[in-house]
Length: 474
Ligand SMILES: Cc1cc2nc3c(=O)[nH]c(=O)nc-3n(C[C@H](O)[C@H](O)[C@H](O)COP(=O)(O)OP(=O)(O)OC[C@H]3O[C@@H](n4cnc5c(N)ncnc54)[C@H](O)[C@@H]3O)c2cc1C
Image (cartoon, rainbow, N blue to C red; front, top):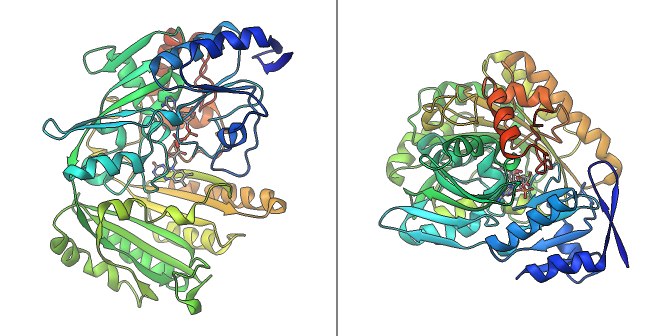
């Protein structure tokens, strides 16, 4: 029997004997269409994506990853690396190629004395928080526990600790990475420092990362959450007052706004369900009583419809948004940095929220700055650290017939906010990355050309291209 495989320029035919050579090299499974578990392994979070890889390798360790990378390169196969599979564009999977599915590599090993965690490349933030909170420690991660540490860290990492302890990649001490030539390399400040630089912002272009070594920070076990829900009708004055408050806030205060609709869910009062709202979600990364006092004004920006503020275990906080992003829903999320939060920008943002075709969609507005802005733009591949805010249009919907309408809403919202931006997108919310080099140049700024040089050195054949691709020089 012959399996059809997608290659860069043509379809390659691999016979069973050739596939068997890879199977023999792996400790983990090698799935082909029709195998039990194949459909589960090819499904990603975004229900818009429906791809059918020819082969899905499920490594149990670095040796399996090396064998898979070598096999893909030697046979000219399209290659994807699958972490938590949250990427909206579905880069974790492909049609007709090989997927390295890291979901069996989720180990987390904590050294509480040195305050360091070594985490395997397929782990989720839930895995990391579970182990590190045993010692009252944390890595700054994302705000949904099922997101992969892999994709999130290598393009930045915004979470509830970003202003206090920086981006996820700012706590990254080293990685073990399998590069396109099949070599296992360490990248750190002292070993392969150029690769270490590139991984922190553009990691998916440089190899399959089998483990991440993170610095840990003391946090919890309980933190103070401030979460008042205001009517969207009060949006303009709530957002203006929030802006004035956060502009003078200490680094311990990490706040975002969500312009959304109350979920149609039994956990919310019936009379409020589906009502358009502005939620202030602020977390104080310090003593809870101090946070309660400091954040009190955020609970009085207008008359709240509901207020979920209070102390909360850090691990519960990290999973608090989970129910609102189920697997299989349709997602298209796009972002732009906002440099000028003028009153006009506020009104435009509220207008974007009012025009959402789906009540599941939201506009999220992140307050940045603090620790994440005190790193030089040239220190890591990730740039635009000067931006004070990020605007994200998060289109989320269920009806397949409404795909175009929802995607158009996100794109139009971005366009409407451009006058208030000096450019650049947060590359973990890039939509499908359809603007390609224009988006990458605007987001990496002066770092882009150095990334092209390094890509040309480490991956001249562009084996790792199922990502926000930085093509090597010809
Ligand atoms: C519900 C939801 C919540 C989110 N919340 C946040 C948030 O709070 N903060 C934030 O900053 N972002 C957030 N994001 C965006 C998220 O960071 C990106 O979607 C990111 O790409 C997800 O990483 P992943 O490993 O889960 O995804 P994947 O789709 O598996 O991977 C994304 C990209 O990274 C590559 N990759 C993944 N792991 C590795 C690895 N070990 N080695 C090499 N390449 C790898 C993949 O090949 C792919 O190109 C969220 C997304 C969703 C859908």
